[in-house]
Figure 1 (cartoon, one colour):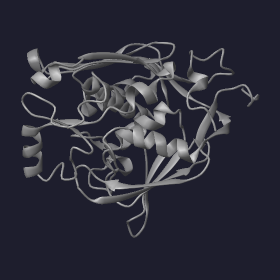
Figure 2: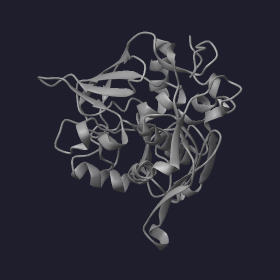
Figure 3: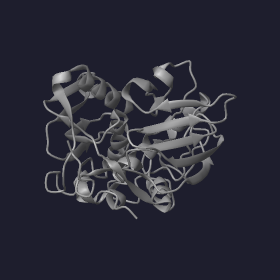
Figure 4: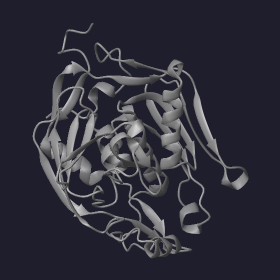
Length: 318
C-alpha cells in the first residue's frame, strides 16, 4: 500500500473550471463546454446539461457506441441513448497533460472542433491549472501482445499493443493522394518525452474535397472549414497557411490514437502500433485487450524512479 503522497505518482485534475465555445464539425451547431475538477477515481465524465434531466456519460470502452468518423459515447454504449461525439481531441489533450479526473459539461451532442487539433484544449486545461490529488495514479499495463486486423490486400489495416515500460505510439498512413503521400508517412512518438504539446497537439484533422462533398450531402461535416481542418484536393493542400508540421497528417492520426486509447480509462503502459487504423480499429483493439484478463494489469508507482522515464513530469502542476 502506498502512503507517501509526496513521493508517489499522483492522480491529477483541474484547479478551477474553464469554458469554451465552438461549433461541432459534423453538426455545425454552436456548443458550450465547461471543464470542471473531479474527485479522485472519477475518470473523465461527460454531462449533457442541455437535457431536461442531465445525463452523465463516463468515458470507458463499454460506453463507446459509434466509431464512424469520430469516437462517440453514450450511457452503457446504447446507440439510442443521449450521446457525445468527437471526443478524441479533448481526450488526447487530457492524456498529453496527464489528467485523470475531469467533468465535462456540454450543451450539445458533439465536442466543439475548435481549431481541429488538440492545442486549444491543451491551452484551456493548462489555463485552469492542474492539481495533484491525494491518490495514486493508476496505469493500465499491457502484459502480452494483443492485435486486431481488418481487410486484405490494399484494404488491410491493423493495430496492436505490446508490453513496454512506457508508452510509445507508432503510426503509418497510406493514402492514394499525392499531397498526402508527399509528406511523412510514419511517425513514432514517446509519451514520456514531454513533447506532446510541441510535436503532436497542433496537428489538425484533415479531409479530401471529394470526401467532404459526399459527407455534406449526408448531413456531415456541416461545421468544417479551413479554420478547423486541413483540406486537400487531388494534388495539394488548399489551406493558405499550408501545414503546421511536414508530417501533420500522420501526426494527427497519432493524436487521434492517443485520444482513442484514453477511452481505456487509464494511461497505458504499452507500445501501440498501427497501420492505416482509425477510431473503429482502436476501439476494437481496446475491447480485445479487456476481453483477455491475462493481457493486462493495473499498477501504480511509489516514486519517479520506479515509473517510466518522463512520466512523473507529465503535465507539471501549476
